[in-house]
Image (cartoon, rainbow, N blue to C red; front, side, top):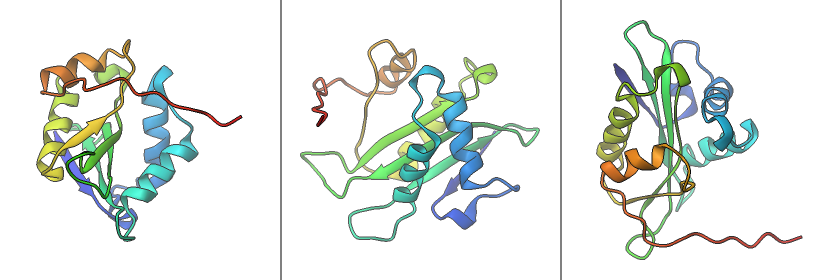
Length: 148
């Protein structure tokens, strides 16, 4: 397993583009997916040089060079009352699940982030168990107001 840390768009390798990476995440997130365009916005935020923004992308490849998992981490620009990082997306290709790949990608994300991480996960998402095994705790329920 090879996990690449990508901090700028030109660091995608093997012919992979930002759009293809976003499409991979979209396809692999199944019913928990966002649009490809929204995923690209999170990637752009991770690659931003603007103060208070930034982050990174992880791309995990199997021994055959096939992209099998990906992650997008955004920096929040805060510390303490809000964790310094938010895990926006992580997905493993459906036929590769259950092999420990998600755990390896998360452990690499812990190493690269180096500070606290928050994430949002739906209660019925099977990945919630992985996050709990890795030490994530549920602090409170998120609520959202959508302007009509």
